[in-house]
Length: 185
Image (cartoon, rainbow, N blue to C red):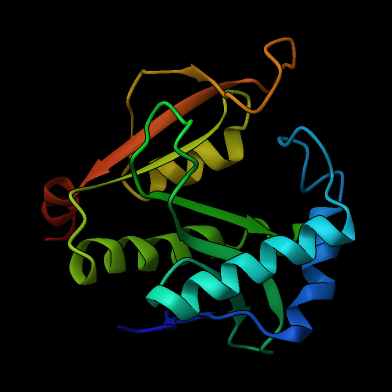
């Protein structure tokens, strides 16, 4: 099974030591993290990168580091993840992304997510992929729609966010393998 994927402009690959500093810059950036309950410490950011790297090494897929082919710069991550069992949609495979703000608005999240979905449905033969985010996160919801996902209308309160937090209510988007193949024709 593959550990890296390519699009016209992007490489989805395993994590390198050189990714950790820009990843921390992303995870500690208030603008980039405005739909998350807290900024990450360096230790939390490094731990997440370690986990992503290990899972890709073990199974050949996960939340891939995303680099721009034009200059090989780390721009964020995109890929597939199995959320915690306490999530209302579990067990499932989720697609997600997070990019440094200077790369927003270029279609990179959409391009990388399309490639990750192709992998999910053709290589892994998953029956469905989900994505979820804070209800107010319109930019990510727009990416979900651009990659063909549909709002399930099954909003939920994120179990790891206090109900009083305005980010607690999450939307759940879904895409089935059959629907993806229908769209891809």
